[in-house]
Image 1: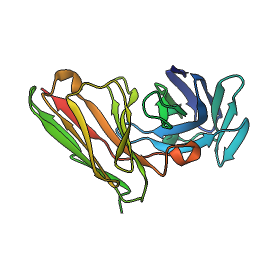
Image 2 (image 1 turned 120 degrees about the horizontal axis):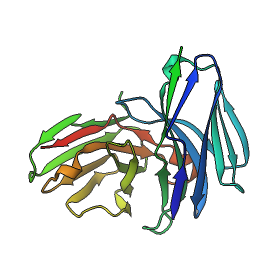
Image 3 (image 1 turned 180 degrees about the vertical axis):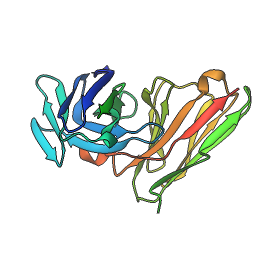
Length: 115
Length: 115
């Protein structure tokens, strides 16, 4: 089965660094995504990791350890506009449909950035 | 210019009615999805189509029927609406199903309220 855990809420100060952790137990693992979702809006893609290590993209970085079933999203120089939910999602072979891959989302971490 | 569009954006209806939500993508992607996001903000896959073929069909009541007339369109028809169907429904598309090609682009969502 698929199981993804991430903290429900976090609060951080503008200009600071915050790390949002995600642990997963996924059969047929094929990679891990992070999405950002502002309130009332659609999720938007942030990052994809399939190999162990850190992927850096501007102020945002994402890390993956396949052996530990662990990922984190690192946000640097926090801005007020970073207040949003951050969704961890694993891609894996789906139960239904041969050769199908499925994205399973965690419940999201609501990040509040305060002045 | 909108990559993934959905109509309508808001849908308010009575219990027992039948309604449809339409989705179109102009990205040339092969794979399309329907997700349901409930009041707790949990995003859950419902269906996925690849080149008009159903490849993922999660445990969803058979009152929900997807239809893909071509690979750019994926519609969702719901019969005999129930209170528990109230949620935001997101359509998404991706280039393909595997790995990084599964980066999904989401539509703006349809907020369904069943009274």
